[in-house]
Length: 160
Image (cartoon, rainbow, N blue to C red; front, top):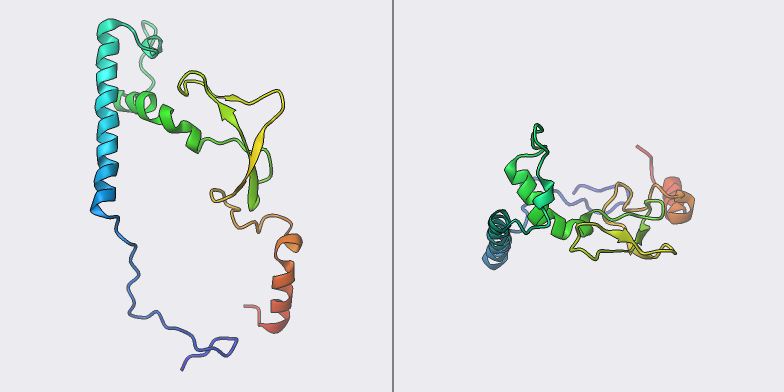
């Protein structure tokens, strides 16, 4: 039997194939149909905006003599899909990126065309950090977060 440093039996992973679980058919189909729905509705809104001239994106055309900065699909994606969900990704924080972070609260009055911070006082909410390089909090002052567990183990176990 293979034993590890603590004298316990070491489990062998040889011959084991680790696989990620597949999403169910319902989950996959509802995700794809949601994207198709957003793309179709966004396309219809673009066509109606070009025909009627009434669109919040009508001013986004380049000036005469200048080219477009992005291709049609990138512009469409930014206008019709990403702008609706950008607040879920681009979250400003008001603390160091430790195990917990202070996320600043924001609001929009124009369907996420612009997003403002709640003011005059910076309003924030403390959240568990699952998104940065330091989501475990080891970049914090480690003597506060994990020293009581690490230091005794260094005395007991060999360091490799």
